[in-house]
Image (cartoon, rainbow, N blue to C red):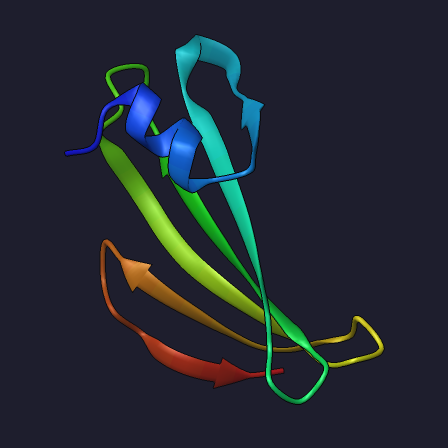
Length: 78
């Protein structure tokens, strides 16, 4: 389990949720002009509730997503 300070260092942005939780967001540039966004939802104690990835093309259109936690659902095309 990461601490709040560790999550804030790894993820550039976050949104506070009711009840003290957060959704952390990290954007990574892709090799072909697109990008991926990683999202981590945590509760008030920084326990991970959900972790997923969204993949966008160079025109910022969502082309795939991948839920990794609590269950790995694999890449899903949109």
